[in-house]
Length: 431
Image (tube, rainbow, N blue to C red; front, side):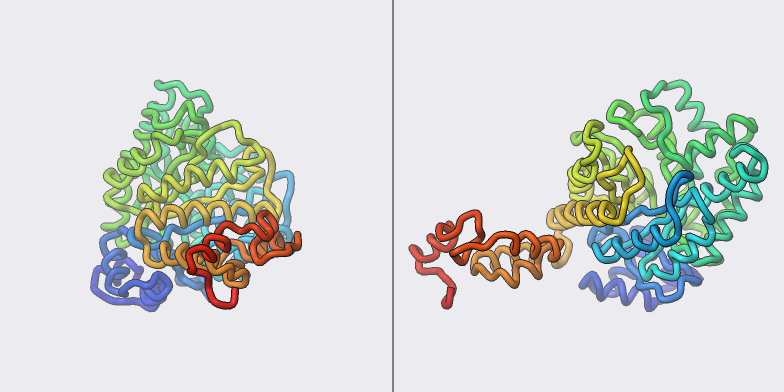
């Protein structure tokens, strides 16, 4: 039985207990959240050695790291380095988006090294296989799509991005309401090309029950992808985006009825002032399903710095109720990230997630900042380094320059807190 089915029966699973311990909350809160669909625990029955995490209402905002090869670059060794970089930076989940090389072998190697939940996009494998066999993505069959989905599920993948709401209706809306950047979702583009070429409905939409059967069999969490997410500020919050979201809301209901865990993916590129409203609309339309967003990126012009662009939008989104942030690296829009850029992307998104958690009142979030401020007040450098989001980076900077005082090298002997503590008589003894 799936986590959702068990929760509905009132059964507290070991995964729910672990999540509760990590979050510092009562297990019954996790149990109820899984039962009503506001929390998911991606935990494929075939993922050996999985350290489960929960995503959803009342839990700390989670961060995902995307890795994977392209048709031009990448191999198993490189991707395993990125897995380790993701784990070292404390990503909560990893997604393998490989489109080059031996895709199944890469996925299986990553699964062996990945103790956190792993996500994939099976349509990539199906589409690339169709090119190799028939010369074109549009020649893949419905069976090809579902065989790829079951391959990923059987291997142990914990959550699958499936663009089930990219259908004839949403494409008609896209065509009638012109966009600047059309479609930037790779999986969405595969399906749109297939639907238009074959003049048929999407198998992922038309045969959704077939997908649910696979997900139910392996307890795979469905991540309903937004194939029509805006790829530019100009296209944010348009009719095509919301046409797809309305369909996704209906598919959420059907997944829950079938006992399948489900979350919803969101934009994308979006101005600051539209983020909170988009979160509210998604939560209402999808009845509280966990919301997983890429960014959002709040400007289109920050090539080379889009991890910062993404963190700005991610913080606002998390504060507004988003549950899951997909990181963006400095190389977004330019190239595949290297391991160091993966690390930078994870840290940037973790900062955004934590900033949102403070606003949401997540247990432990405010206390972490209070502990850091206390350490700063006491000029306790050892504690400050331990409490830093990225202790290694903080220690590297601290050691870079010597100082004659007990403060930092910026102030030297003239540390404001140290001076005022002396004046007020609040200095910690021994400082």
